[in-house]
Image 1 (tube, rainbow, N blue to C red):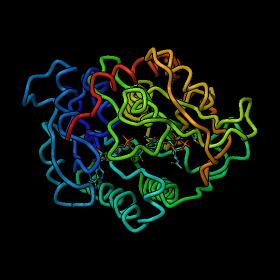
Image 2: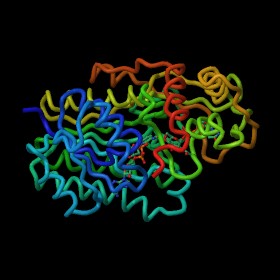
Image 3: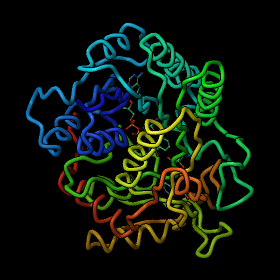
Image 4: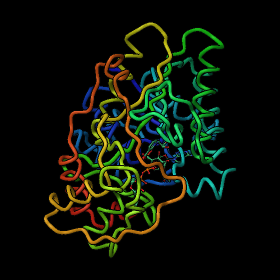
Amino acid sequence: MSQTLLITGGAGFIGSHTCLVLLEAGYRLVVLDNFANSSVEALRRVAELAGLGPDDPRLQVVAGDVRSAEDLDRAFRQAPTPIEAVVHFAGLKAVGESVAEPLIYWDVNVVGSQRLLAAMRAHGCRTVVFSSSATLYGLPEQVPIPETAPVQPINPYGHTKAAVEQLLRDVATSEPGWRVACLRYFNPVGAHPSGRIGEDPNGIPNNLFPFLTQVAVGRRNQLQVFGDDWPTPDGTGVRDYIHVMDLAEGHQAALETLLGAEPQQLTLNLGSGTGHSVLDVIEAFAQACGRPIPYSVVARRPGDAARTVADPSLATTRLGWRTRRSLTEICRDGWAWQSANPSGYTR
Ligand code: NAD
Ligand code: UD1
């Protein structure tokens, strides 16, 4: 019988794409999500793309909160076979909101992770893949950024990610048998090539790619480019954009590596190793959607770095994984999603 996994936050942007990849790889999934930033429709479409009928036991959904011991217990008990591993996506991720509401961010991201680990221990599960973030490098001194770079987050969101990484290391060191992967994502973007699932942020998007796709589809008038006076080739910020399907496959590789080897702790960057400027992304997206993207240059956004690019070589060595999809494919698939779903999942 195939292995069962618990996916917290599995209805979200990265979670939904990862659920699809894991179902296609033959895992059974229990998804725990409170739908604070997602829609059950995403999971319905994941099932459809994976060829599962309604109520197929291979994808079970528990509507619940990762901070609730009862909800976690329900998820573990509902699994058709004991849960072998957890992929922990559930959390809050808006940097500006984390500055305004640090208590909520520490509660959901840190307390939620602590409750999850307690439930895992209670149910004899000691394998976990955690959604960490390149945000914990803050304003990096060395680019490309290796995992050995200092952890120096500059906002509460980043602090919660650093705290959970530390919690995971402490727990893994406290008793034998833990298998832990902290995956530090760079900039996840794009969508499944079918255009059936994709990113559907609540309200005004904070990040470049979803804002750009909403401008392209006519939901917003124009994009603001945050500064063209950065020390980069064209003066706009440079980032390491990673196709969400590459990222999803990175989770599969991490799970297979953890489950197939002696207990270990992994901390890995998941990025492409290539940087693209804001103007590069605007140009590539205009090509993909066949229309110009109106934009104006405004002041720099406080807290931004000029350039963040991953050194992803450790993930390649440890997982045998690397990104395969280009910026052109990111834009093509992002447009497939946004053009077919101009209002997202319409929650
Ligand atoms: P998302 O908001 O689309 O997904 C998060 C999911 O968690 C949502 O479905 C939401 O409803 C759920 N959730 C939130 N609070 C919950 C709670 N208390 N209990 C249960 N479920 C809860 O975000 P995403 O982009 O898919 O990100 C997934 C993870 O990856 C997050 O932990 C995020 O911090 C991390 N991450 C994201 C990015 C990014 O740019 N998207 C980059 C680095 C790291
Ligand atoms: C954001 C988060 C960071 C997180 C990362 C990956 C902030 C402040 N930081 O950073 O914590 O780890 O996403 O999820 O939210 N840009 C514009 N116009 C826009 C939006 C962005 O020009 O409307 C520029 C930015 O200045 C930057 C680039 O586009 O140069 C990418 O921005 P964004 O998508 O927000 O990602 P990060 O800045 O990497």
